[in-house]
Length: 201
Image (tube, rainbow, N blue to C red; front, top):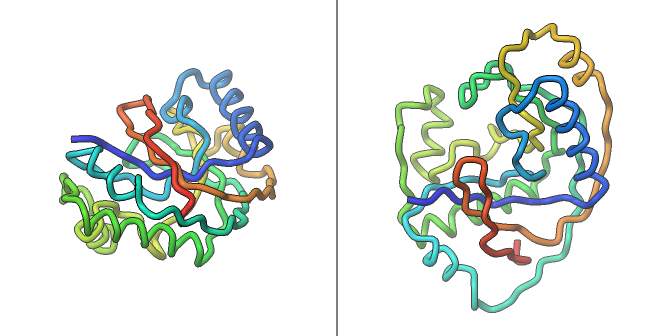
């Protein structure tokens, strides 16, 4: 079984900004979950049995290039007591729009139609929306419940009133860039192996 992900990556200005924030977290708190992950927006992650079959869905098909669109990186946020990590996960919001929603849904439907998605730990999701999404697509955060974001790190053993957490949540950011492609990766723990990219959204 392989874990794959569809990412949107950013221009140098935004990437540099997020990497600097990761460096600050590492200096203050040491190694933390997600610190070593590339700067990206996750459209979805899926568990599949065959990477070659995934490639066949996209590679060597008629080349269609979608028109690039703008993506906005905005206010800081935090997932307190993140159940996936046991820490406080700090991030920046991506301004949600219909284009992002449609892109995510289109490719989830396309992959599910052509591949058998491995769905495990069904009882992990107590929220019915998350459970239904996971059952249908193999990814729980689809549609209105999805919060597009760029993760900086998930910090363990800090209080909600930690000075840095309060400072981070008070910072302002409003940057935007054009998106011209989606990149697919194979993931194993902190390792991200690039598979292929597409320009057809």
